[in-house]
Image (tube, rainbow, N blue to C red; front, side):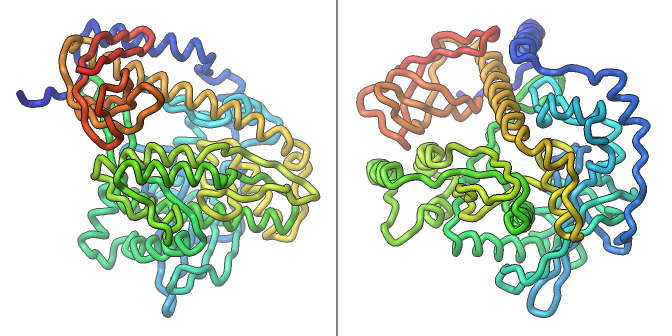
Length: 473
């Protein structure tokens, strides 16, 4: 029997799902519309144009299809045996008065939240989707990082300034990948593959690691919902390397100045690494002793069910991420272990609150000016704001996916599915269905092993609370 397309269009289920998603929002006390005074202040914001003018550089953006809140734009050029990278970040601080209505609303939200039934933005749309967004064919203020890179991707010099820029192209990931694959030398992203691969190699040399697991995404189309599992394109990793390079440079600047906020993650201890090594051996996908765990993870074939099982287990190595604010002394813990370097969030100020602080600190340091008093005074409050926001985002994400999963499965109770086992947790097997892209668990049947397949039967699917129940066939 051919696999059924996991697309929810049934009107009754749609109605139940809408009610369930609304109840989820209410239970998490998520913000709704911006208050009138916030919208009025955002509409009235009229920052002065920066003195520097880089509109002669043809910047381009790469984002998911349909995005309007464009935080970053790039211009890539060859320079001798190396490269020059201009990386522009939206100048959100120019539109947000410290302590004003927009600032207070943003601190309450912490970050843009993505729900199945709509986006809850950090800033009013007139800022995030319009005047601050690096949209094509429009003059925009930006923090522009200029990196000179050697051919191997190492950084020879870094400069930061506020400047006026103009993007010439808005690409989505598929368009950018197609241009690179076609070898279009005139494309604005023509050098991204070279530079991205060089930076990936630098990550390997540092001992960094990257999971790059397939994404589970809720997609709205044709009046219904789909749940898709998508493997990131190579261009997404190369694009991310520019952001990571900028964040590591920002962290270095802040540490040298002894003021700022870092994104940290503790390194996995020897006991966890040893347990992970034993699990890879049990899976039949052993981690060779001469490879770092980053090199091992990078070499896995994402299309192999065994690799998915390994990556599921490896996610346990990447825990404990948080923010550390400091002023006057360097914090005891500065490392983002997955990157094997200090790191700061500065490349997504439209969508993440903390980036605004990092950008203002770095701009002041780069210009040889004092860091503004409002930044220093409010730094200690940033980590708890971001921790609470991250918790809400995780609950919204998991709750939304669970409810869409239940809705897609609600009329398939009693059906039998083939599932790939990701992990054995005690007496339960965590598994993935192929269609629809659902992750669930059930009591582990005899002979179940991570990376193998089992047959499961759907016993129940409750749209109201997003619960599904399977048993082994």
